[in-house]
Length: 207
Image (cartoon, rainbow, N blue to C red; front, side, top):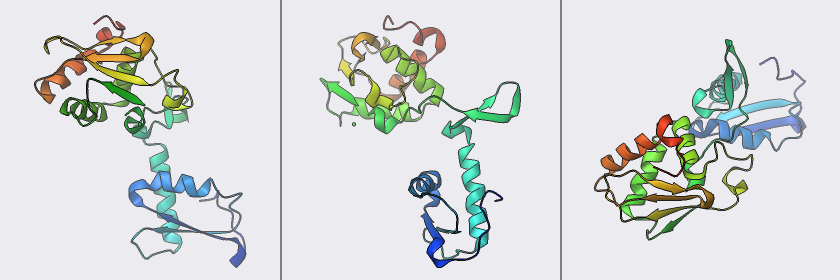
């Protein structure tokens, strides 16, 4: 709170930020990024809530701080030798939604149950497992700063005629993932869980 300068009230320098609690970090960043500075009275209001007093500002500041350092958001990484210290995470997060407008489908429709199962499985993965799957698929360990847009081409999923008791394979030069017609989502999840294990996923495109 000491970072917010105390200045005399001036109607010309009052900032009102409306935030959705479910999207607190995104809403806050989008609003503050547009401001040239915050040298004035700063007010926060949560959507569908009436209070706008200083207590709301303190609540927002606390919640925003918790979200910024939430390990699930991967914005900061804990120092190995001091778990009380953090440094910015240089790697781009692998957003499942971005992974999907950047994946093409061959012999599949986007609405195909196999494709729906696959993305549900990816959404349930921890970040490190998503990275391992991306590595198996493309031989790229982390995305460029531009995200999927920075890749040489889009990714693709191809259907094969192999039995579904086999693992998927990949052609990393072309960013192609080849998987079979699985009998159930559970069976597919089991096979992709094996792929994201370190000793399997590191065998690029040969499994």
